[in-house]
Length: 371
Image 1: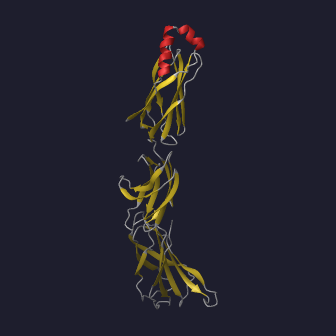
Image 2: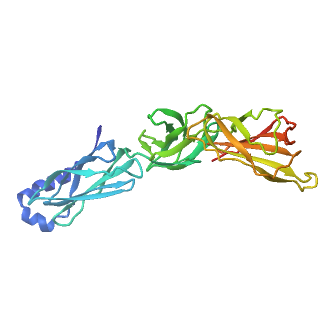
Image 3: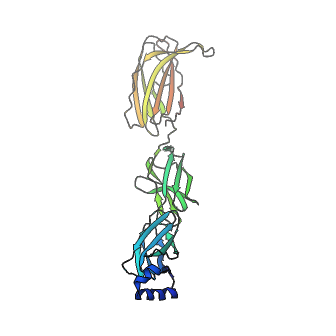
């Protein structure tokens, strides 16, 4: 640290001081020589948020009244008045100033002037002091969307500001253990900026809740961080459940009054949620738009136990008397998974009294994304 010192010696003033010491009473009323600031010392550089000491010395032909010391600049305006003692012609003092942590710049001016008991003022003496910024930047982050699937993109917007000058802003994403899974940053200039970052979530990224933190660094490498925001990565399932009919066997025949035992296997790549079963006959002409479905069998409800991804269901379909010999009965089974994807499969048989022709099953699936 360098001591910035300003010293002035005035020969005429020294002589005047000596004369005043011989006859102080006359010097009070007839003195026309103003006091002189001989020295002003301040350390440089100093740190914001810390205190520093200023040394000052003034002499006068008559006793000193006060020395006024000021620190100004970079948003700072501090003043201290140092009182002289009785008949003190050579006044030496030290005074401390507390700098705020956050300042507008990196330089202040230290100045001083002396006033004697006769009201005469010295010339103003000043020196510049460099300030090392120790105030960290502020940062905030937003996450959009807050829930994202694998192989999808999420955007982070970081807003940052600094009392002097920013150097870098960025963002990081951490998993539940605190390990970093994504980070990005850019160099910036200015005291207030907004920057956006995009993360394309990998296909194998584990599902769960992650923490997103925005950060900023200033020109002195002071670092500020935002409060953590949550990001939920969910399983991006677009595959519907698979349905395989195990019974009735394709090509089987059924009488109009027979109970049809249906058996099917339901599987999903994640988790099954629900299933519905119905058996209908179709009447009317589809080309004319008059076709309608008529429920021909009573189908018991299907309950899927939570957490299952593979199960076999068996249900007895009981005729309700609406189906006639020669009509086709469509057994329709739908399954929905935890992501809302729906799979559907249809098995058709024709009633013919004690015998029937069987149709091969048809199946179809409609994927519906649940967010």
